[in-house]
Amino acid sequence: MADEENVTTDVANATNDVTDTSVAEDLHTNGTDSNMEKHMEKAIELAVAMEEVVHGDGNTDTTTNKDNESKNPNDDNDNDSEDADNQVEHIKQQTTLMEDMQTTLQQVDEKIDNFRDQKYSRTDCLCFFSFLLIFTTMAVLARGVSDLSFTQTFAIRTSLIERDEFVPWNDVGEKTFADGSTIGDIYLYLRSVAVPFLLNPDDGYRIQKQHSLLGGLRLKQIRMTPSECSKAEFNDCWQDEWFRGTVNYTYPNGSHAASFTYIDSEELDDQSWRGKYGSYPGGGFVVEFGLDRDAAVAAIDFLRDISWIDGGTRFVAMDFNTFNPSSGLHSTARIAWEMPSGSVYPNDEIKTWKFERYAGGDGVALAVFYVLFVIWVIGITAMETSSCWMMGCLKCGKHKGSYWNSKWKALDVANLVIFYLSIALFINNEVYRASVDMYRTDAFVSFRKLQYGLTYESYTTAVNGLLLWIKLFKYLAINKRLRFLFTMLSRSSADILMFVIVLFVFVIAFGTAGFLTFNSDVDDFRSYVFSMSNMVRFTLVDMDYPALTVSARLWGSLFYF
Image 1 (tube, rainbow, N blue to C red):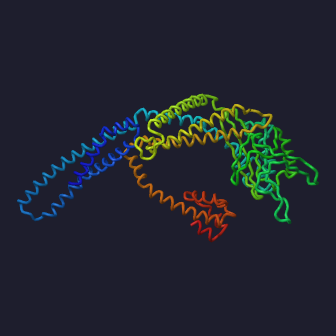
Image 2: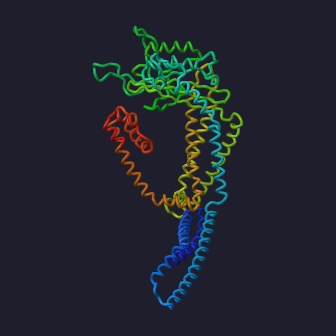
Image 3: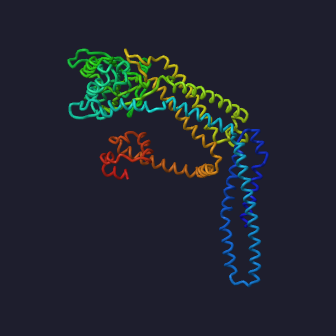
């Protein structure tokens, strides 16, 4: 009884607190929602407690009746009559109390709804959801609504990488692109698979009858700088530094064959490229093959005869571009071989883009949504700047009226910064795109710089989309159940942090042990950085058990389990 009265008193006080005009006045004057959040949290928590009491009243009555029965099983009739009167009076009081509690609970619910209307007006919600819709539509249109990009990429990769159009191609049985492991395999693949498949004059230099090859092929290698060996008994050593000079090649009889000079990335319109075993600059030593299959085969034979790829080669790549006039999509492809420490590791990158963004009906819609997106970003910037100026951008922490009091302000600012970064990348890509001849067939034109610009633009768009959809919880948090979730996470944040620290300790411990044991022959532990990142990944996926046990049978089994 006393507990229920205390709860009723607390809820009544909370109701008075939330109806306090000073709260609304502070919200109207300062534009801050920190005090409002505190009152809302208190009212919601007390409302939940009230519901528990209201719904648990039957249990209280039953307990009370049982206690009375156990205390007075043998009383006289007079005492029974007096107890019955007392129980009736108690039930009447309890019924009145429950009615008052229900009324108070309804008042709290009404005040919470009023808080919601004051905290996030209909205009605020409408603006946010409108912008979210505009941004999502713009992002989807920019990447393409249909699956044509995937199917075009898949058509090229399936033929050249996954199945190979001409198998067997190495004279010793079936061997796919991924199985290439020697320098000889590189030449054989180029001569027997890549050139016949890509440079096909019978089909008008079209791939799979649809994708037109633009300007032929570009073969590029990156070399290390030659140096003297530390041991006099050995020669032909290279230091870990890119060579940017001239290389002279000779025939087996010693006569001069050819000279190749390093070409800078700016002249090649190329970018640095990240492979599995290193990052490589955009420049290099280049050989280009035009739309002439016989000439390309002869050139590859010549390169093989002069040992164009040798011990000093660190990276080899074959670049080509295609255009599908039916879909209006360009594909930029790179078939690569990384060669660390004398080994050969095949790699590839094939991407399909709509370089002509504004072609067709989807392109016109994209242009409209781009304009709306920019207008919205400018409007949001003006609103945030005005709010920051009025409330004080330099006021931090719990300072009353501080712009940074709300937990969501950091997310808003991060969104705006990445929005402007995305706009800057968009402008840069459009300016560069206008200078590129995207349909030239008589000479190779590199699209890699344009592709990288569009890739980074899509990255910023992806991050913004993630942040915007997370920000949706800001407007949904008024819901009692969702608010409970956020409150629970907030109160358990210290425990979650401790768990992360303990997990991090285990990751470092096992990552270090794995690196020290398996770094020489297990790919997942080939370097200390990769060991740590892969140990984080192994919290969700399985380790390569066969590779561990081949490296160390007993320790590998123990480490796995």
